[in-house]
Image (tube, rainbow, N blue to C red; front, side, top):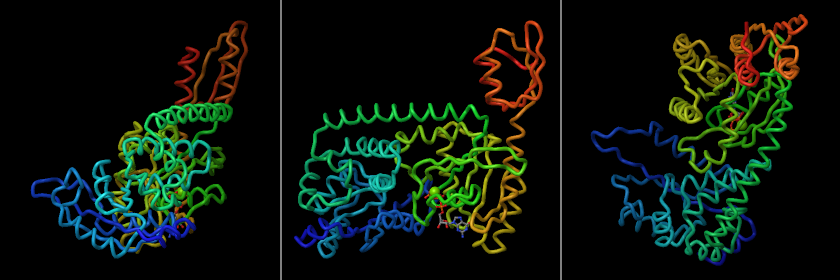
Length: 442
Ligand SMILES: Nc1nc2c(ncn2[C@@H]2O[C@H](COP(=O)(O)OP(=O)(O)OP(=O)(O)O)[C@@H](O)[C@H]2O)c(=O)[nH]1
Ligand SMILES: [Mg+2]
């Protein structure tokens, strides 16, 4: 690496990256689990890199029939890349696949350049985007867990060579210099801090729960249009951009449905194929909130060539959260971006939608389909809210107060030793009420 490069990096100029996309050859008789096309896999990774201002100098596709356990690529392929790298002198090589720590280290040694894999890149993006305290702690934790297994001295050497500039900056970078024991201590401390931030948030949530507003959660693949739809519905202006992971921290806003029902709409982090496990673990608390929602709107970018593969990826993250996509009647599918889909495809989508009640064709840009979406949301919410009558013991003031906080009281008759009360309550709250106070509806 030339002196010039170090100086550029140190001055905070854009880093030059060289992308390697291993095209794994599926052998006869094997099932190809990856349903993304080569083109869109590459486009997605390039989009990820550009979104944190990395300059892509070249992207090469390398056919791989047998993955080598020590360095992923075969000797001939590594040598070919090595000579290309000598000419180009990139700051970083991005490998569009998961690399084991050993593979990563060996490639770095052989090529004399920093190599990061897909997970490393996604962690880096999350690091750049996190805004809230909880978001930053989650990302730092994920980055440390990831680096714990990759703590190698050769990196330290490379970091010095590169003058310790920007990339992989922030929390992760410092840790390379310190030993595993310190990392472990830091991880323990981060977990404690996260716990306390979450405890505070739960307190906040409790006060919100007192207002019996149902929650509608937006979920979907990154860049599907969740935030654009959120802005349209709530008249807000949250960050919505044509870049992956524009949203990282969850945002909540109140929204009034056409039947005047007040709800809370939540926008949250998007999903991506092969979402790094470290991230899923750290963001679990954020993602888990989806499973408590009363309605889950799955936003799909219907204009994307691989929207079906993206949809499957979202379904599998939801299923990790315990949500059974086919059976769960809280789910609404939104086929978004119909303003840029040709009419033939729209008719096709319409025909296919007949089998699925809760599916809406929509444009979050021009608002087509919004009324239908809101109607479906109201219907789902109505289904989950029911009429219930209880007979509450007069001494049970707490149970009575709880009902006032969590349901809509229609009528109340006070008797000498009990109170007859008639409420509208949602299904989940009815379950809670029975659990907490032992009352069942009459
Ligand atoms: N043409 C068209 N573009 C849309 C539509 N909805 C969203 N977009 C565009 O798609 C891009 C991504 O939109 P976002 O709302 O940021 O997507 P997101 O799902 O929140 O993405 P992340 O937060 O990154 O997960 C933006 O450039 C939007 O303008 C739509 O209905 N039609
Ligand atoms: Mg967003």
